[in-house]
Image 1 (cartoon, rainbow, N blue to C red):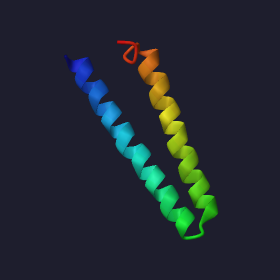
Image 2 (cartoon, rainbow, N blue to C red; image 1 turned 120 degrees about the horizontal axis):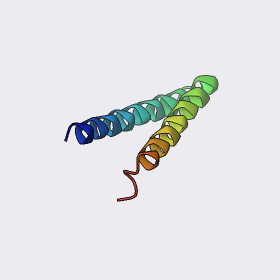
Image 3 (cartoon, rainbow, N blue to C red; image 1 turned 90 degrees about the horizontal axis):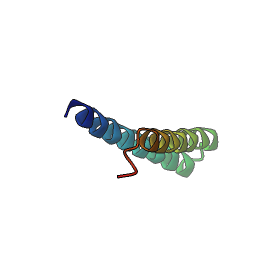
Image 4 (cartoon, rainbow, N blue to C red; image 1 turned 30 degrees about the vertical axis):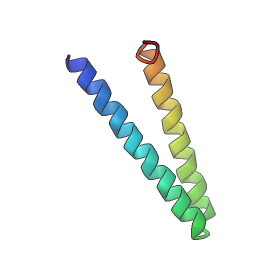
Length: 63
């Protein structure tokens, strides 16, 4: 039971952070801050990759 709660919280935090970095990227892109936008999108994309790797690495995505 404890492990499931930790996994759900981790997934929720990754979801929120990915959305935050995507939002910062869009905001930066609209205000002509291309370098900051690229970094924000890169971090958001990297977080998606980490999330997918962790979920399938733990065998949770294969239920």
